[in-house]
Length: 138
Image (cartoon, rainbow, N blue to C red):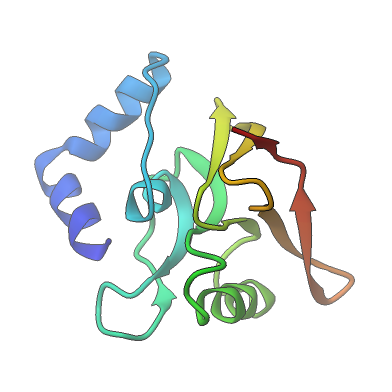
């Protein structure tokens, strides 16, 4: 993740992606490919520990966390960073879940198989709250 963003910035790919997105080109990605569109998230790019990633492309506001159900450390680290104010509130997605945005608005959550979820994770009244988002099963 860290290397991907650094290389994109050195070669102007970040600017090209923003121009494409603003022109209505569909951008997609899984894992690091979903993190990159957001302002913030978590990465294990540096070593085996999860930590805040370098600033993402910021096309989408807030933070993102993939692998929310398949890597045991993801959920507590993501929630802890949001709770500490180290990264902004955001979205977490279990494996097999897609977040569909039009512009900066989340318009649909798609899941396969049934029973997979995405969540809005934010601080409410001083506590981290994880709200399940309705999903359409594919």
